[in-house]
Every structure is written in structure tokens, then in C-alpha cells.
Amino acid sequence: MHLRLRLFCLLFVFAPVLGAQPEALPAFPDDFTGKWGGTLEIYNAKGFAQSVPMELHILPVNDSTYTYTIIYGKDKEAGKRDYLITRGPDGPHHWVCDEQNTILLDGYYLGNVYQSVFTVMGTYLVSNVEHRGDHLLYSIQSGSEKAVRTTGNQPHEGEEIPEVKSFKSAGYQRAKLKLIVD
Image (cartoon, rainbow, N blue to C red; front, side, top):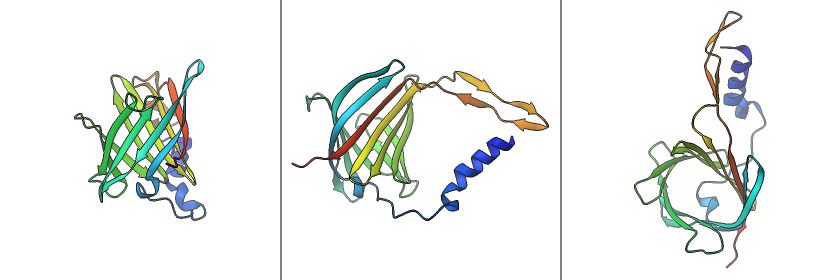
């Protein structure tokens, strides 16, 4: 493997053990529970496209199930997306988002970020909810699941270089969400 790629892989895998010990991380989903609200900013290749009010409600149903309700826009009924998250079989960091329509999305809590990566109708989506003290950072990155470029996959200076695919980022959404006081 090419030296730079090898070094990147090693740093990516071992960086957490090389640095100082981090503070205790928030527990997912317990420390994420509540009704959170803010403004979702939506970007495309031309730049800022629009902003809409957004809420995220993560509330316990029982020991292993939580609501995961997303509300987009001012009309809280029309913009409501009611999901449930339940513990997954891969361990305490694995959660499954049930869209309650036959779609199940696997998500993983790593560091202080709950992340889900999936494709739908030719588009990839990377969804993140990061706990940052008194707020959550919610973001979604999207683009075509078809690679825009494939490189490598050939020898270079005596090393076998792996195939690497690049993908276009076509959309980005983000919101800083604060707890809503009822």
C-alpha cells in the first residue's frame, strides 16, 4: 500500500489512542434526549439555498426504544417525520432507525456522533447528530452514489496502489439545535 495512504489509515485508526485521554463522552441516546430546535440551513453547489425551522425530538419509549422525530418547517404536522430508534445487534453503539414504513436505517454512535450512512434512489446520504455541550449539531451531506472518478488500482514505484473512488458532494444541510423549553 502506498506510504501516504498507509500513514493516513494508521492515523485514522490509532489517533484516539495516541492523544490525551478525552473527557467522558455523552451517552447515546440518553444524553441526547429532549426536544431540540433551531434553524436548518440548506446548501447546494450554488451556495446557500434556504433555511427552515427544524426540531428533533429524542424521547424514551422504554429501555431500548426512543422516538426520533424530525420536524421541518413551520407546519409542525405537515413537516413531521416520526421515526423510532432501537438498539441494534452490533453492540451498544449500534442503533436502528425504523421509519415505520418498512425502511430500517442502521446508525452508529462513535465518539460523540450518532451517524447513519445510506443510499436511496441513486443518492448517498451521511447523517450526523453530534452532541456539543448544551446543543446538538445536526447535519446531512448528500450526493450521487456513482463515482465521479476512479483512480489507483495499478502499481506505482514498486507498490500496488488500491482503487480509490471519489464522489461528488451535491448537498449539505446543518442546524445548531438547542433544547426547547416548554
